[in-house]
Image (cartoon, rainbow, N blue to C red):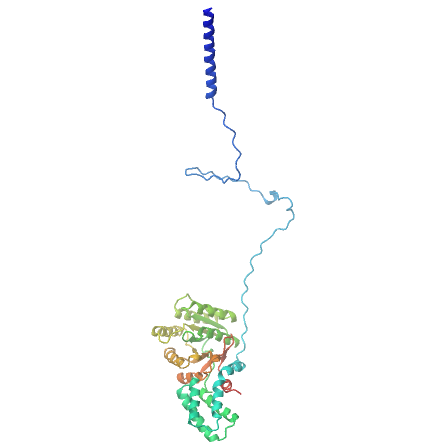
Length: 403
């Protein structure tokens, strides 16, 4: 009996040991990997890390437009085609106002600001008794109008003689008397034409000089309009290289009337630009070359010397036909100081008086001509493009003393 129990116990132990081995082997067996998760289409693609091998690009077959399926509803739909940007139209060429009689047409504007001188003189001369005090007032009126000391003394002396001989003094007689004497001072025998037709070969060469603030660049542009109105072709030389605004301004004036503008780099050599302008004018067969120089302070000796250099360089091509000095009529006697210095450097041949409409000091015309011995050839009577007019002594005096 004991033997049977022992056998049963041994059998149970053996069965238990075998069961433990089976269970342990099951626990040690690796489970199969889980199925891969669906890719997240919203997540950004992983960036390659340092050392990763770049994938060799694969060429995919390209499909023609016939093989591409259009989305439903798009068949026959119009395709929007972007239109090319419209080209900027070039500015229309302007036709300047004719210059013949331009001063007469602007006479009303001139007389509004100038006839204070004429009316003042006529009022004084119409007094019943012309005593010494009255003649002193006449002198003061002329000096205030910037006629100048010497011309004033000459005018008063002649007026005294003629009034004494005349005896009776009706308004018409006084007006005629004053008109004659003013014309005598202005000079009617000056040649006031702007020389732009050289005898040898064109182009005519005109250099425009003056100090800053006199309206020199604007005057050069307006002079181009005067010449174009008279049927001339014009080249503009922007030799005021120290002011970028002056170059742009002159370019604009030229574009408006079809003039060709030669310009150089900002701060470049003015003489070089002037030389190139004359060269272009000769090669292209233009009639006139206008050279706008930098505004020179007459107290700066070095700058004035440079202006002389521009003149010498230009004359390597051909002699200058005109050197026009632009003066501001409102500067009065200070303008005469400027005129004196410029005349010593570049041999002034004519004067342009600007801002003559804004002052009652029209006598500067007489004074500056007397100072330089050269005529006033052009006057600026306003800010309009065609307000630069050839100077006509008769029209000027008529505006000065009124009707």
